[in-house]
Length: 281
Image 1 (cartoon, rainbow, N blue to C red):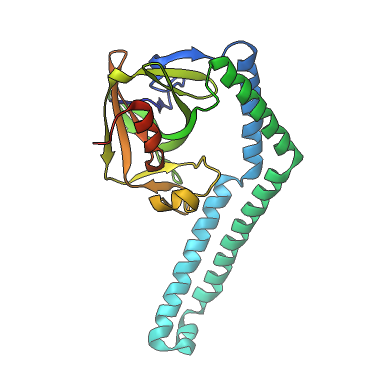
Image 2 (image 1 turned 90 degrees about the vertical axis):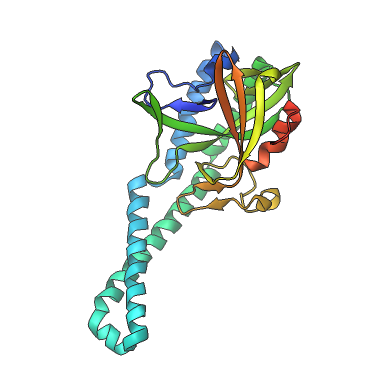
């Protein structure tokens, strides 16, 4: 069963596995606008972040510092502070600077991100993004009241004809993908600013709850995952920014002669049950 929003990251042409379900795509000048905008957004994102190697080294340094100081205080609890310091002063002299390095890099990253987000260049890019998005939605026939929802996309490679999820040091193979969901007659439509997919409602066999934890990268909502209406879902965030959900939901369907699934975060399930008329099993 293929994830509609799964992608083989080593394929020559990178497309979602649900590409056979696409019935409309943007064309002409809009494609060029989107490509130029994507480059500018990537450039802004790069400016807002520290290089990955700096972040990773800072995390390693801070972790090592905590370990050193933890070992020192554990020894001090048994030997007394003076004796522990006499035997292991190196742990203090090494641990404190390492923790300071981690704190400094953390603050540096926050300041850099804040400055980039407040810059006039960022504002200009955001204004262009809103304009291009509006033009794209109009061209694709996406209604203004379409629900803006998240689904879980999957990054993988093929090995021996089977999908092998791709994880990184700081990430997970799943990623939150923001899409529009709406109805056209007896079809469920899933879209972004580049395409519209159609799923016949009669092809959706079931929606099931999965009582397992799923980790995904990215958060697309303006409200933090532990705030407001999202707080009740108890979404956990780790030090790398990965989000962990339990439960999540699986919408299973058959279309174009293939079996697919759409993986849905808990806070979006009401949109899918409303649009499809299905209940969670």
